Amino acid sequence: MLKKQKGKCNFCGQYFTPEDIAEIDHIIPTSKGGKDEYKNLQLLHRHCHDIKTATDGSNNPKETGCSDDNSQLN
Image (cartoon, rainbow, N blue to C red; front, side, top):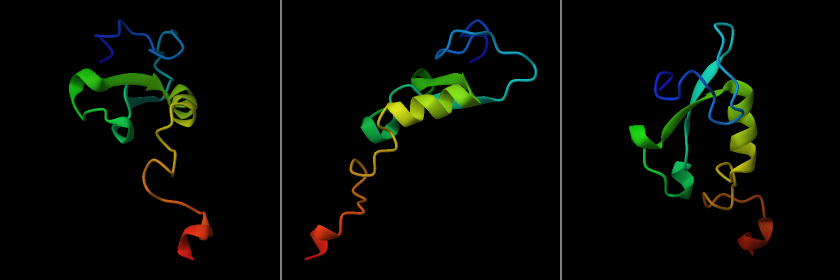
């Protein structure tokens, strides 16, 4: 992936350095219908991955069927 991305993070566009912590990310989150295959994966800095995950809806509990809304229990 690093070679495919020419050494850059797809989120921020900065080059990876040896000190960086890189994480593999689904371009389209699996919770949003993305496939778990190579063409849907990218390498991101850890902090970029955290930001993307927080903003792309992949951690939305309502999408996964989980809810803290107790009104459904009545």
